[in-house]
Length: 512
Length: 100
Image (cartoon, rainbow over all chains, first blue to last red; front, side, top):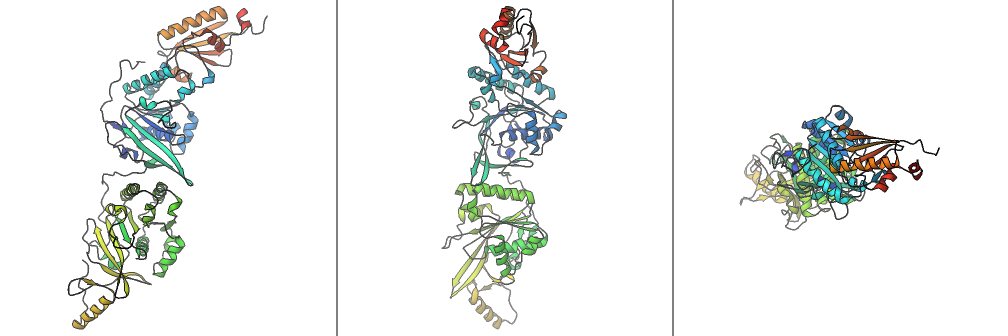
């Protein structure tokens, strides 16, 4: 066993990274943890430190051919095996194949008698032997701070930990060192002093009845990182950090298209509908037909055989089904055939992250091809502007990656501000449609226009539509002599005039 | 014959090479045993540099570590054994053992 001696040599490459294999974490760290160096993962009790560290080793062994040593100062090997099972990892099998070595260090102050000077050379020899035995490239120390409760000489311990971390670098292992958060301090005994390359903070907040876990990269020397807090889940297959974002727009843009569910509306898009994987925003004031449009989209998806997940933040499933039946859209058969699932929740029942976590989870579990969020504005009500936009961006990326076509409705305030959509969420969307009510000549007429449709030619007209007992139907356009589009009775009168002049009905101005 | 007269001490001292602490620990231990447990002890020195696998098997973290295997129960005494009083407590040497 060689000691660290005169300091440590730097890792193989200053920015080389070791992928964790943990969903989302490698994205926000631009590739993983600093290779050949220790990373500190800290947080309160039960925040998920141990599971994160375990997954780092298991994925390293299974996916990256890097065996790992788990040195546990708390849980016994059996307890770890059990915990890992909850994530679907078989530690016993990995150990048998020499891809993993679990070593439980037991140190109790009342079982020790201190009689003079000592050091941690035994620990270094033990860890070094474990690393050499299986050719480990990854190491976890969980949590080494336990030594402080086992040994009384904190001064010696600190000097020895410093030596240990220097030595770890010379062994060129990528390590996770966990530490328990204590009040204002990141770790009870200031481990952050020794581990300065990368610090990840986990926490768990309980709001109302649901707990939300969050992860934040506090520090990452020499590497860009998102400083935001990211929600994360501990699921059946390990952790997932929710940005799953920063795809760097790498997702495959589909050229396949899907119908809007409204015949005339399909015609307003050059491709006869949306692109698969598009995110669509439908905004409008109250009662302009947003939910009806969403229901059409859901119905047509189910008719195609696509699973549709409908998040309703305003109405109950039975209310939606009843209302839509009144305009000729029968959702019930699709619910019965389990092609449509309606999840109704009061937005205020949960915090924003909790909602997003729930949405992610449901999508992951059921793998729908179409998702409807009605209305997304109710989510906005429970978070701050920046938060909401960031979260929504993540959700959209998450769905794009899975080629899910998503439709969001957005309730706008009346009074001229219709196009000032809430928080500029429209910039995240591929397609944006605006629904309106025009009041003129003593009548109110429904209008629809496409504000934008990325990568697709589309009609620039404001079209009139009616809601019949057979659903939404777009009405043919009529232009006045000055080129403006007439709607309602004015349109009717004009069309009559035109017919009187020209016996063949005109289809002028039909959308491209 | 006094109670405990037949007690024997089986001791294992873990060190790593010939460091000042290792040397001090072994010297302290021998002196103490000769003084208090003459003829009733056995010391085995384990150098983890040569047998690193024993660190895990015997759950060693700190060096030097003296493990009292007998009399039971097993007890761990750490440090260079310079604090005689504490070592005696750790070894469970009672006054009557001393008189023997």
